[in-house]
Amino acid sequence: MVKVKILRIILLLASIAICDMRYAICDLFAQDKIIAIVNSEVITQKDLDDFLKFLRLQLEAQYKGKELEDKIQSMKLDILDKLVEDRLILMEAKLNNIRADEARVKARIDDIRKRYPTDSGFQHALSSQGITLADIEAKIREQILMYNIVDLKVQGKIRVNPSEVTDFYQKHSTELAIPEEREFQAVATDKKELAEKMCQELKGGCDLKDTSDRLSTSFETLSAQKTGELNPEIEEALFKLRSGEASSPIKIQETYYILRLDKIIPPRQPTLLESQEKIYDLLLERKMQESLSKWLDELRDKSYIKVLQD
Image 1 (cartoon, rainbow, N blue to C red):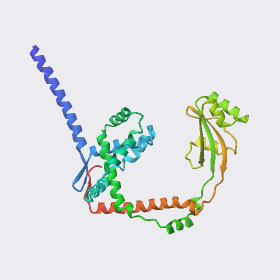
Image 2 (tube, rainbow, N blue to C red; image 1 turned 180 degrees about the horizontal axis):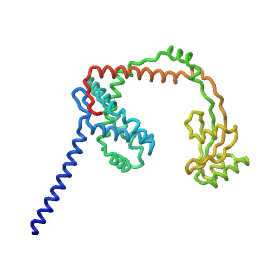
Image 3 (tube, helix red, strand yellow; image 1 turned 45 degrees about the vertical axis):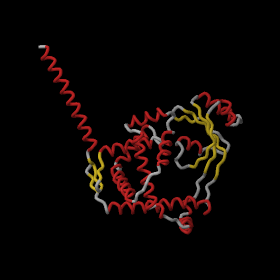
Image 4 (cartoon, rainbow, N blue to C red; image 1 turned 45 degrees about the horizontal axis):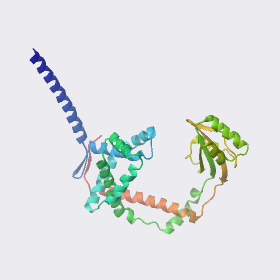
């Protein structure tokens, strides 16, 4: 009887092991599922998943929390097209014997590493995304290869003539107008009583910087235009102030802000000399996008591309 029970246990454990193996194999098959074919190469579900992990790591430098998730979700629809596009560019790089400078690869990795206070923090960020340092090196190397071939085939051939800059300035001068700008001081504290005390002292003629230093609050000198870049509550308060006037405490989440308007710079029309760098960059970007789109269309036309994912 004991032998029978032992046999049952062994069979049960074996069945569990087989089920676990089936799940592992299914997961492996899911990762190896081909979702697109580009000429003689395939793009798998794992390629797509790895791209999303690397994308998340890059976007973490600019976005956090819900904003990060929303940004990734907004890009997901175009990810497969981007993978196909990248594969075409990499094939063209190989065809032209383009190489990646390993010093640049290392420098890019160092830049990512610097975002984290410790190396263990960096390693934890990688493991939480399910990627390794080798994965990052490979992706960065690919990015540099793509940049080099695009520079050779597209960007390096683009030219913006001075006459084009002048012509744009003459036709779009009103669009180049510089809006009103406000130079101001700002202090921040998480203590309501301290914020109210500072306001009272400012009404009595105290200097905001001196008061901030004495009370050990955060202080900055800033400038802003009414373009929506500031927090809406901060922007609304700032553009209601008269020169030399200070605001009441503005509570945003758990922090209280006090603003003092130093100077109002009225809107004005910039000269051609002031505008030429901005116009040059704008025209260069337009030409770059047009030329890149044309070049990619040419690559697609001479390639076999089949997308297998809905």
